[in-house]
Length: 113
Length: 117
Image 1 (cartoon, chains in turn cyan, red):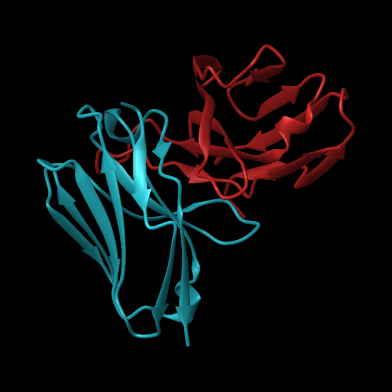
Image 2: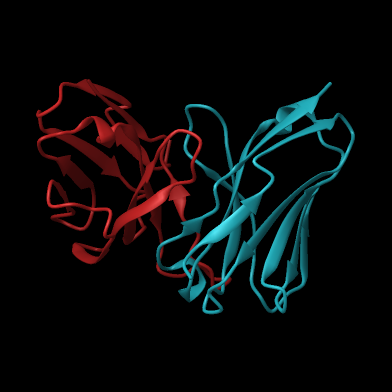
């Protein structure tokens, strides 16, 4: 019940295209869903986060779509750029992030120029 | 730089040796987390502190692992009698209990990469 499942494992997108990464969860007590971006040799960095009372959140080129009934959420990167090439992790937590994060397995995104 | 810092960044040790890692959180953050990340996987929770109190430990944290945060500021993670399976990136994160927006964002450090030979 604590798992967060992420797909795909890897993704190749052309520059300017839309990158879409999906996550699914089981634990209905989760109430905070962040996405982290990680470059090789670095720690994860928060990209964008959403609460389950909102169906969509947009920050610049990054959008989270949230489907509470399906227990699924996704990250959309519009106008993908080579600098977006990184590993992306979805995560979930209870207590609005004030407890441990449960991470997905990660998606290695490559943006071809 | 006011982010989370970790020391050392890399550690190579022989099986059976003890190692200790240090994490300095963002100064006003009272929550501190340790995670472990193996190659190609997402970080896995190990333990977390609120101030000096250790509030939760994962089943992943065997008896060989111990973490402390004695004065509610920096934290140490010690691994005794290291095994090859301990080779991983050890990540520290910190957060306030709540932000104004109601979320307690966790900010990660650069990690300590451990290799056990």
